[in-house]
Length: 342
Image 1 (tube, helix red, strand yellow):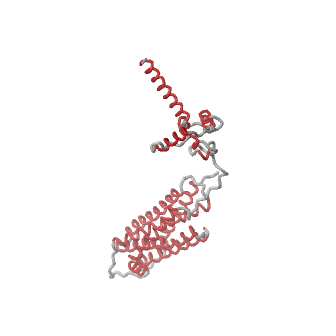
Image 2 (image 1 turned 180 degrees about the vertical axis):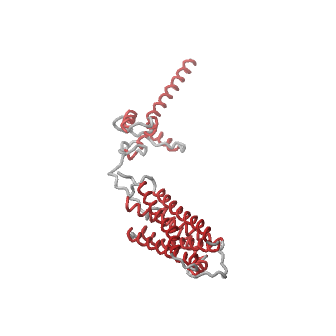
Image 3 (image 1 turned 90 degrees about the vertical axis):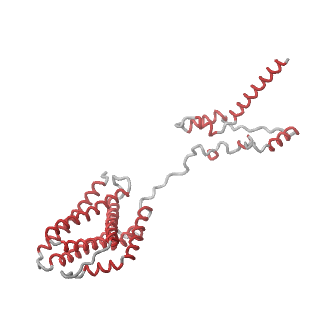
């Protein structure tokens, strides 16, 4: 008798476990069913799997008449704080088959895709931050070195005599000038980028605008470095060390002033819609004026006492005009090489 009761108890326990497993199989969530599918499953396969598990038609729970036993069971279920599962009639509703009810499913795109916004400098956060940093650093450096700038301006148009004492610059003043020279290269590279974008639109081999600006910056930085090397080599052969030092200071000063003067036109072209024609005319006027000032300073330092004019023309053409023409040719070849020809 005891053996029969134990057998019946074991059988009832196994039947209860099967009912619980079947209940859990029925209570599987849609995301669990989709998680069992392969990652490359198509939407049609996902829909077929959901219909296989839940059926094509939503199941509606039949109403159960309320009696004392059901009310008592409901009261006992509410009293269990550990039970946080929602009942079945809360999980199945009118929107159960809608894709918006299941965030794990791809509901598709509504409408059509619009045209992408074209690239502009005014919308580039990196270029904006870079120009803003250049303005702030230049303003701080100018506020701390304004006496140095005024002294350099006076000495630029003043004729030096052999008996006068040469005032040396401090380390901070040299750093200030080198920073402004680097700013000149950056602003010229931005102007070249504006011209290339205006002429060839965005059809370039490089994938990013920053790479193109970096290439232009390298070209202009190499141009100024090559000029300084050529000046050092030629002046070391024909002139004295004092004249060479005075000329290199003047060259660095004129290069720094170019960047300061070109900053407003770059900002105007980038953020206020200044035409490319006016930008090129302004930059060309600044470059021509800078070369005329260099010619004047070259005459004061090297050729004023000798009274020769043919040598200064040859000197200026060899070390100013030819490198400038080479720079223009290099930029033209670089833009033509990076442009995509259809």
